[in-house]
Length: 510
Image (cartoon, rainbow, N blue to C red):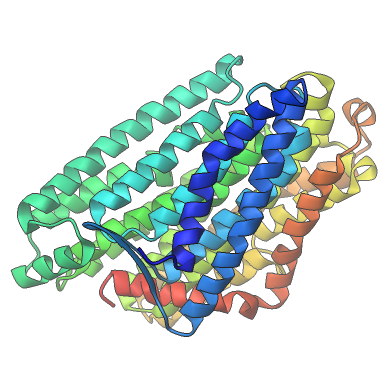
């Protein structure tokens, strides 16, 4: 096996996972206390993830030159394309910042070495998922991602609500995984292969839209759709996002559900290879996108807890990504695919920033004082006066999520909307208008949070809060910068989004 940048990009975090865990335990020889052991594990995890940026940079340069990387081991193979590179970028960015951020957040908690080991493992398996070239390999990486996220959602195992969220997530994801396996079995029975390219060739050779392709696609849509949080398969999401540590909430919303979308699109791609199939699946994805936008907004409007509100807003933004993919399938607009994946990147940054900023305020107002009560909008009254950087970071994230210029969220939504209008199709134009109205509606629950922080008198809980640790402030500043910069210069991401859009169209035979 050739030791290419792709090999190191996946092997480094996976091989280092036990070292991160053992580093925390071996620290007992030189230090006592959960926090000291956790700090050793955190240092190892941060070093590993920072080290992964070198093979990532080499892989990105090679992909820009038109080169590709493939890893083969027996019948299994991995191939890095634009979609895989985009997913790797979001995974590494959020993973690195979450490890940096979580040191003070987890102060006094047991099992910190497990936390950091699982974060590093999650980054590695998501990169592997983005490079899978056959259905069974894709499922294995998908399940590995699910296992790491189960353990992190239920990190606060002494709390009943956290365990309930973990069990709900586990059960629903397990049912989805079974459906995906049934879909893989159906594909294998009808094509004799699970390799994506061979499945595509078998579907094309059939010459007509076969019922089994629709059945397999439906199984994939429902099975992967649980992880993607497609309405009505989303019921695990608000509990998991709100009960997990805030760094994991950022990972779940910012990259895990997006990785599920990548898995879904990879699996559906070969089944869309015959005439008429792209339109069928495009309509279906557009319908799910519209449902996600509407239901997500209506549910978010009711929330008083900040993290639950952010969780429901993830449904809305998944709807925008699905809209971009639907435009690409229905009209063959490459800009729609690129826009959907541009929004995947931007959403990871925006939602990561929102959860980390909310988590910083949750920490100083509640967790550092010894309680795990949820952060409510009322708690944030006047927070900007005492905590200017977290308040500013949260405001930037919310305004960007709402699509206000000149922030990154406006640019990614604009690309999707423009691609839809350029399709010159009445139904697609209607979908774009519906998406635009939902973007405006989202401001009805983002604005009260900002209003509370800047326009109200400081609440007693704000006056009694602790200072924000430096690691948290640094993470927020680093993540806020690209959310603002991309809004002014969206071309900064073209080296990622354009190859990803082309790769996505290639997945669907475009």
